[in-house]
Image (cartoon, rainbow, N blue to C red; front, side, top):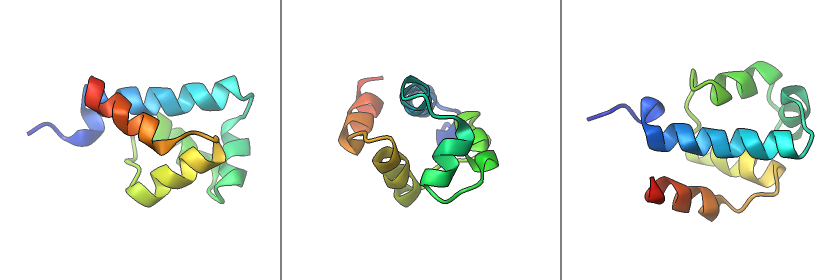
Length: 78
């Protein structure tokens, strides 16, 4: 079994989240403030050094005004 943090599907989800952050003009620090985490947390998530749990994923999506279901659909497509 492939570890989820290194799978193509998970990396595409991270890319989707990072793209949304950048498109909204948010820095890692800005997003960190929105979800009450240090900017290092955002960097580690976006570089796949740290895996998001479900609750953190929901916070991430809420802060970026994304529908979490869209991310799950993306996981299912790849």
